[in-house]
Length: 211
Image (cartoon, rainbow, N blue to C red; front, side):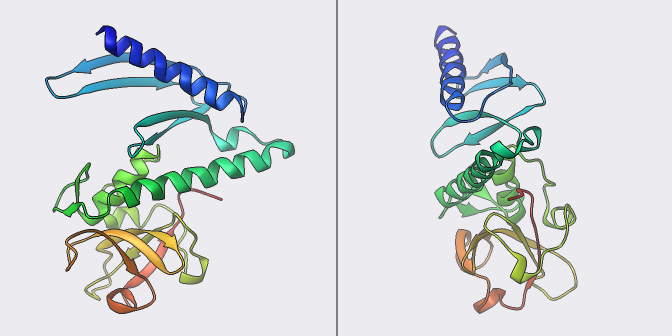
């Protein structure tokens, strides 16, 4: 337990120091409880509504940052835009760290995924709640056409041409997207949006991280 308390203190002080140099924090955070099993330690963290937690599983650290919509003064627009870009970049970094992880039905990580489970895992790890399956995911925002897509948008497909969304992934930009495929790759892979199998399967995108 002493090790956990030290870890909790280290996480808290490190976050506060790192963020204080960029965007002023008006946040409070508390380590609510620590659960221990023979294999894992789980930290339950609470914080006020002005902030949100970003988690990067690839680098195993946690950031406590101000919510973008809480800072509206004109002199902070550049900082909040940078924070949004960083959030997208971290999500994509996490996604690419999972390349090659195997496809498995009804799994949402951390090492095996079905298609919607992969998208769910990425956004949940970034502090953004979305539905677990692809059809409900496709209804959580305004529909984006192909020419409106930006890096970090969620993409939706009808792979059987049945007027039914059954596949999702995340746009990487430059005509590429990352997803957990049940096809030849049978795992997390990067595919082309504008040619090959998915050329006529894409239906629309949704943006959950505004830029």
